Each structure stands twice: as structure tokens, then as C-alpha cells.
Length: 349
View (spheres, rainbow, N blue to C red):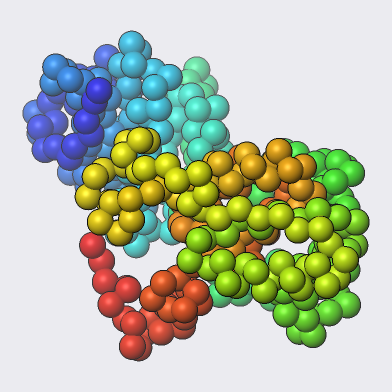
């Protein structure tokens, strides 16, 4: 067991940084460039990892990150790294920099190497006589913005300018090649082709129910499984009749099937206030697997329960209905109203 907390006690962190080969002097005073410090302690209160986020000449910099060798491989470095990245983002950073002795480690977290001639002045290392002579650390950068921060969408029509943080501009070519190679799989390719054809032929002409039926037809699926919330059995029944009217065999299973009490899997007793029996998405997936369904459709499984169903379903899955008890199963309405009637959703915790 361990805990990660913010700290202003710099001396023990400086010792850890120094002892792990970082160019850090042991001292009590927090460096002027430091914005925030984190420490990680084991169950005995011993320091086992630490991280320092700073700002130099207007650039956010991961100044130091170290993990005691005995605790490496436990994911502590990654957790501290994500804390620093999140803090920089919350302070308005679009990117974050570092000088790395082990760049391969940071590449695992989507950091990119930048030629020294193109890098800003972010470290004393860059002014050292040994820099790129006998000492060869890598200057690295990570964009903290992603597609969800984009207002351009140039990857669609390519008629505008890509933003600096654009993932298309900075895409890992090996990651892209790995993804493209997976479309050589016959099932993957057939799914992609069928989906693209339906989009092209019926753009803004078919409802999702109709698209689902058409997709099953083009994929030559015969047996369709429905994993439904017990509170949406009426809707599931209507959908099943539609599928049968189009010549498809249908089977289904509701979330409460099997009647397993919540406490049997460690769910807190207070959760039984809204029902004694648990939803059982893994059982739903296992039952449809046993039925050898060709394709499964989710109707209104709870957040998290749907995740478990996707995880254990052997057949491909689509979602027809996304549960939202407050908004009549139209969760995107909360986004449409986030600047008006439902602006409370934008409040910070």
C-alpha cells in the first residue's frame, strides 16, 4: 500500500532525486521554478517516489521524477506523471516539456523527442558544456490538448489548418500502422465496409433501429442477442419483434436474470435500498455466448454494467439505447443544455 500527497518539504525529495541520478542539489529550499511537488510514501511512511512540476521561461516543465528502484514496475512513476500533466493542464498549459535521461520510458506515455535546436530553453542541462557531447539526454514534449479540444476538424475535409496540438500532425506512425494492419482481419474489414456503405447509402435517411437491421443483413448475421435492462423489457420486446419481422432469430436476457443478491459479490448493503438483486452483465454476456449469437445489442444497461458486458461478449456489440433515467434515455441532452437550464453539470467538484 502507498499514498501520493502534495508536499512542501523539499529536502527529502531532493535526496531521492539526487540519489536516482538526477541533476539536483540536496537542499531544503524549494526551487523558485517549482509549481507543485508530490511525494509517494509506503505504508511505513517512507518516501519511495516523488515528482516536481515547474515553470521555466513561460513553459511548463516536468523538472524531476524519481522512483526508488525497489518500487519500479509498480506504476508509481506513471501515476505521478499523470498528476503533473493534469496540474499543468488545469493551469492552462497546452503542452509540457522535460529533459529525459531515459526517453524510452516517457515514450510509453505519448511523449515525443524534440531536436535540441527546436526546443525552448527549459533546463540548465542545455547550458552545460557536456550537453550533446558526452551527455545525451532527450528533450521531450507532450501535447496536453487532444481531439476533444479541437474546433477545426481538419482531419475530416483537410481544407483548413491543423492546430499545433493536432493528433494527426503528431500521430505515432507505428501506432497508426498497427491499427491499419488490424483491418486485414476478415471480420474487422467486413464490419468496416458494411458500416461505411450504410453511412453512405442511408445518410440521414435511416434511424439507428433501421441501420442496425440493415447492418445485420449485410453482415449475414442470423442470430441476434439482446442484453437489456429489466426496466426496458417493453422496448426490448418491440425491437425483438422488428428484428423477427426482418427474418432474424432473436434471443435476449435481462440484467436481473438469475436473481443474485447484491451482497453476494461485495456490493454494499445500502445499495439494496433500490433493489435487492444485482444487475449481472457478465452473466448476460456468458448466456448470449452460450447461445452462439452472431451479434449482440445493448438496450439500457447501466454505466459500468455495459462496460462489463462489452468486455465479456464474444460476439460484436452495438448499443441501441443508452440509459439516462433523468433525461428519458437521451444523455446528450445534458450537453445541449450545459450552458443554460442544466448548467449545474459544469460545476467543479
